[in-house]
Image 1 (tube, rainbow, N blue to C red):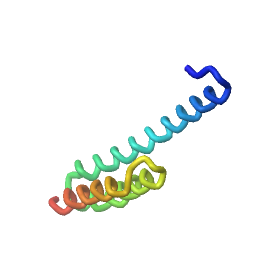
Image 2: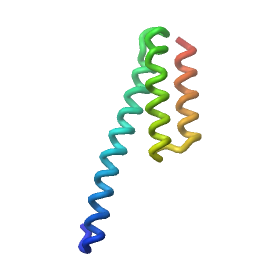
Image 3: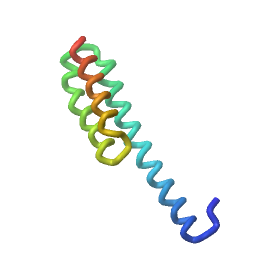
Length: 83
């Protein structure tokens, strides 16, 4: 545990950011899972933009790198086209 005043503040900030990042990651993974588990192409087509949006938000917030996001989007698109 931090002992200095600035160290304590830094620990509080890190915890707040950690929770925020976890929420964003969970939203992204849930959206991706919904697309992958969609029973038919029509359902997956409606869910695909939401998954893309969640991935793009993760990149914007610095949770994912751009190439990682591109790879995940490509994987989703490939899974969608195979339905």
